[in-house]
Length: 277
Figure (cartoon, rainbow, N blue to C red):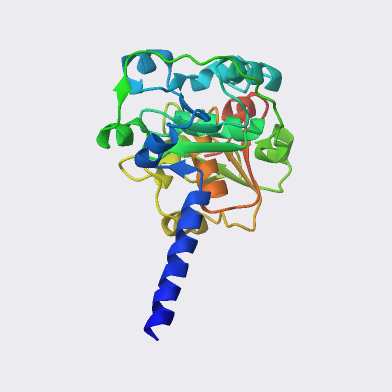
C-alpha cells in the first residue's frame, strides 16, 4: 500500500513538473542556468533609457515599441520585424526569454509578437527584472550586442485578430484595460469600450510582485468573466500592449485553444466605430 502511495505521489510530481515546464514562463533561477547555453537569448523589452540604467547582464535590448508602426501603434510589416530581430542577434530557433522592469506589459507584448512571428521557443521571465534582482543574479549597465542572425518568419495567423474578426460576433472580446478605462470614467478611456466586450484588467493575471497567478486562480478569474476555454477569444487594450500578458496566461498557462490579439486595438476601433460605456 505504501509503495502504491509513493509511486502515485512521484507520478503526480512528474505530471506537475511537466505542466510547469510546458508553460512559457521561467524563473530567475532557471534562467540563470539557461543563459550558460549560447542558444539562449535574453531580451529586455523596456525602452532604451531604462535598459541603459540597469538590465540583466548579457541581455540585449529590443524596445517593444521599436516593432510598432505609426498606424494606431500596430506592428510593422513582418519582414521589417524579422530584419530587426535578426540584426539584433535573434533567431527563430533560439530559446528566447523576454522581460521588462516587472509590470509585464512590455515583455508580454514582445512575447506575443515573437509567438506570432513563429519563434519556436519563447518564454517570459516570471516577475521580470524585479525577480532577477531579488534572486541576486548578475546585472549590468553595459549594453550587450550579438552577432546578426537570420530570423525566419512563420506567421501564426491564429494569434492575430483584425477589425473584421472583432466585428464578426464569433468571439468573446476581452478588454484588458483598467475598469475606469473600460467604463469611460478615465481620461485615457477614449469614451468607453468596444460594444459587447467584457473587462478583465491585465494586472489581474499577476500577483503583486509581478509573477503570474496560479492556474486555478486564473481559471477562476476568466470563468467568472464568461471567458471559458471552449470559446474563441480576442484580446485588446488601447494599443494591445497590455494584451500580451493575458495572451500568455490564456494560451500557455490555461491552454485555451483559440486566443487572438487585436493588433489595431481601441485606437483603430474608435476611428470608424462607436464605443459604449
